[in-house]
Length: 384
Ligand code: SF4
Ligand code: SF4
Image 1: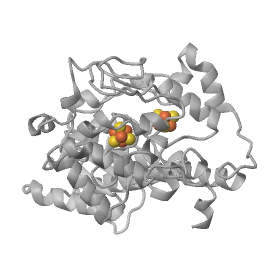
Image 2 (image 1 turned 180 degrees about the vertical axis):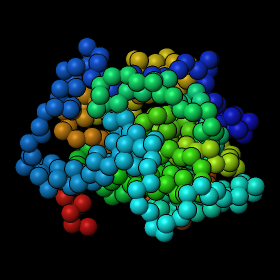
Image 3 (image 1 turned 45 degrees about the horizontal axis):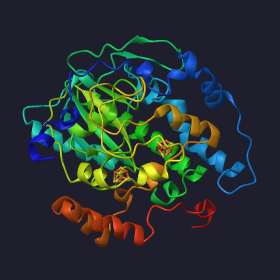
Image 4 (image 1 turned 135 degrees about the vertical axis):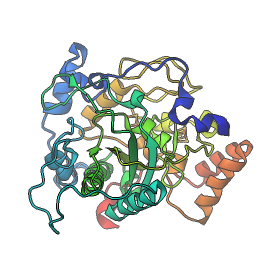
């Protein structure tokens, strides 16, 4: 890929007209309406998972997972459709301190200064990364499917929401390293709760500035193309966003707003070329849901949007593994060479991948030699 491609943001991956994507085709929704997925839905959503006498699957592990998800599940429900609590669309002022008179609005005549302030606020509230883009309406779901109602509803996002602030929240490196045991699910759940916390507070701040803002988790629009447009990273073989700072070890939220902001430039730092050679996520996927070989425009099933050149994930077999495992999985994050924390060696390799893709086989060899991406013992989570 070259810089011209990167400039087109997430559209760089399109190989035809973009088909609208109805959220009901997303894998967490299909078990609630797709006859072929109903049994999987019963296993995934309705079966109690007794603790096991096995590190990473004990009661203390499961309880920690539940606790990590608590803010998302109780006060946001982005996975179940959003539009409530931290992700509410309609907001009523009940009591605020200090009691700012209503009707005030900041001067938005200098969007660059406003953008800097918004990014400062996002970082202060806890965003690990924040980027801005003009909202591409093709990434907004053509219809929403809140799990709590189990039916499609219109997803009419008013035209004035012209900008998106993409937010990435880093997940814990060591906990993700224990995947597919529960410590990685603790990191995931905490990521979801932090998404709601950060995006919800940022949206509320923008409302306080006199503008409209909607905070979203997985609801309302696809987060990955928005994050690509906002310059946070690139699409990878594992179907995830790879960021230069944390690789795929992030969770994504967004705030949609009418506040005029200055968009960031999309980026390209060698992920596509590296994924063409590296197949570690595919090798380590316990359900073989990630493909080897080259990218394709052919979807696996209705959970993949048509017209996108990529390595489409088979979300059906992935969710089936989660149901069997009794918790979710992050092997495709754990095993990715881009996952590593910052440090002199890791930063130099990332620089090398960007500048000298011909050396990618060498970087991969070094990754294997040093034993990166192997599963950590789940017990270590409690002992570190
Ligand atoms: S989450 Fe696990 S099962 Fe699903 S694609 Fe990633 S590695 Fe495979
Ligand atoms: S593990 Fe390798 S192939 Fe998979 S996403 Fe990461 S870099 Fe790409």
